[in-house]
Image (cartoon, rainbow, N blue to C red; front, top):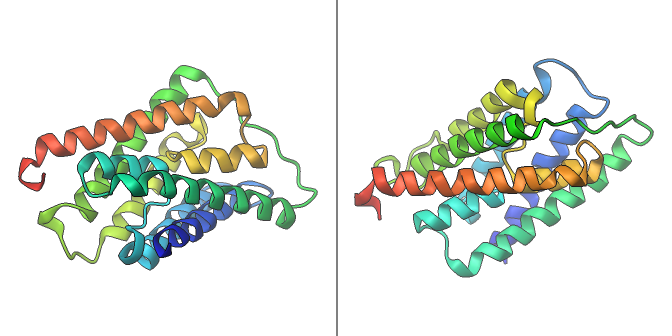
Amino acid sequence: MQKYITELIGTFFLVLTVGCTVIAGATGVIPPLAIGAVLMVMVFAGGHISGGHYNPAVTFGVWIRGRCASGDVVPYWIAQVVGALFAAAAVGLLRAGAEVKPMPLSVGPALLAEFLFTFALVYVVLNVATAKGTAGNSFYGLAIGMTVMTGAFAVGNISGGAFNPAVAFGITAMGLSTWTNLWIYLVANFAGAAAAGGVFRFLNPQDA
């Protein structure tokens, strides 16, 4: 149970930060910096308990890699999505009255952007947080947070920069994206995670 509560808390603060910095928040570099930073600190805070996934795609990739028990996958996903929806509700209270407009997406570029940076994120997580060669390191949270920050800077204006199905549910519930676009995130994020898990296993057969 501790693992699932940890996942809920970490995902909550990640999605809360997304909503509060994007809706009636600061413009420019602030949202990506804040989002990357909160992910970093939450990974450091909960990594020793749950692995600090806070992302169903990361959980999927870690499962493919063989470091997440099958019985934990669905409970992790539920905890992450519930945390995201709680965060969306909190943002609705904190930003009450603020104008919210869904971001228009072009399907092809959005799919590619989400696939590429979800792949990058899960690839980084697997290498810095689960590989034998980096076991016991003290930098894994920074590497993970910086990957999301980089993706938000690079393609945030193309796809919204979710790289995370729970974030996708959160921003949709907030009105930053439409429910009709949710499938883009789900398909691209899980496909990117599956590709990263497969590539990790191929490049690191000694870690199987």
